[in-house]
Image (tube, rainbow, N blue to C red; front, side, top):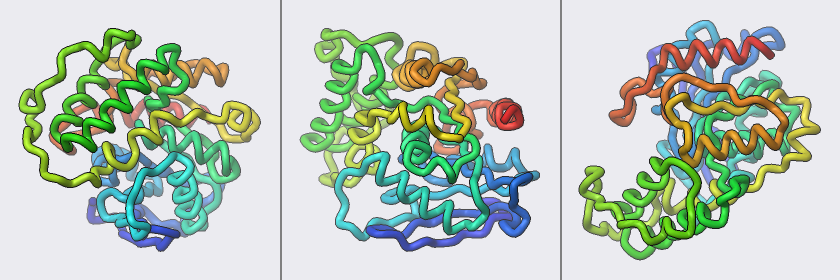
Length: 293
């Protein structure tokens, strides 16, 4: 976190959420809404570079329940986008600044769609970047089967082998077919992942969020009726990948054009987690899209 950020905690049913505020909430208002950056299961650390591009804005980031600093007290188990949407509602209400603008990445984009469907009055604009909502894909049967296989692999063999399958799925270009399950199983070592099972089953992605996120069916009627401006975005380099294809399918159902952002699925990263996108160009495009609202 930057020196200008202040960290806060918020007790919610089953967890304690931790969030960071850059800027003065007292300065927020109709002409200066809070910009909320959300991911899932990525925590606030992943938005460090992007937030640094918005020093003129009040920026809030948070760790979703079960990730980073936001520890669960509900005993664990799988989560759904609706669970996260309720956490986001509580967070936005706790800020006390009125409706916010939201940039949401990946699973966070799915959670953002769930938030707008259930609490549209809290969000002025949602920019949902590559939501991996596999339910909307023409090849949903094969995509969801691959997701289920990853989950079962995790339960059976641990993080390394499951994560290798997950990475292979996210990198796959084009629709999945019935032959996808017969493709060679990727080697965890090829991705720098452990080959041994450490026995844990609480991974935020593989154990808590994967099936709920990819299996979520957006409420298109609620989204269409919402006063919220919803923009679906995809990365320029992501064409053909599952999350980008799902994003395009969501946009089509909403009757809107896709906003093409620089770089890839994580194009806003500037070295976080060892990954690099184009955070400056990404932020410029995000700023432009938000200004159109």
